[in-house]
Length: 298
Ligand code: SF4
Ligand code: SF4
Image (tube, rainbow, N blue to C red; front, side):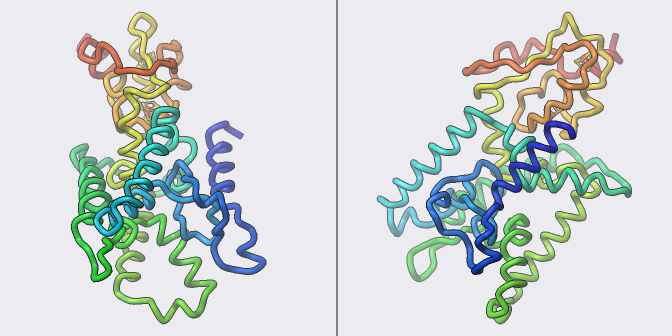
């Protein structure tokens, strides 16, 4: 078995390992739930043993105006956790740990037509982060003074798959609460899952605010990808195997790289390596944009 799928599998099993659900029902509420799992894994999933950092971040924003002191303390915790995961792992979380990323990779293996969407569509996730995760939870308050966790409430397909559906199937009492919102989220889930079969990691590329946050650390975190011009034979294999369709070497450390290491493992000349170094990536303007473009131009 290859290392990365094995690691992804173990991570998904660990994140959803609360077997007590099968014995006495209900979700896990023990001490581990006070900690954030690095990847997107719904807190309300009956099997989840840890919290979702994106959910915590939204709760902080939603309670900031009603309970500023508590929210600030929780916010420091959430930001500290994201900072720690970001600096240590960056988007290794997406490539190696996130259960929803793992699911997308398997779905993409299903036979059928495959598509490539315009690069500009990837800016959508900036809107999701700024509007649904940060702005709306803070700005729109209900009668109690608290805001809503808008990304979870109206969009997150991981939440629908891991929490809403299993909870509805196992708790008949909840079925009376099903309404328009549930059908909307079910539609989002079905469209995202279908989209993922057609387009590799559609959710990560277009929608995931958590991946975007971790992406900010790709250029300043503990690990960085390095390309050595003197070794490169311009075969273009690295760009061919990149699931995020990145231009290598210029985008090796961009927010989009999910650190799957396909490029590093495929390079026949060992021109790509993983290096440890905190601080800004140097000389970005001086490295070529793309090996394929450089080869075609020479
Ligand atoms: S640049 Fe390399 S590590 Fe990053 S997503 Fe592409 S193949 Fe994976
Ligand atoms: S860095 Fe890319 S283009 Fe250069 S040798 Fe390696 S796989 Fe080929």
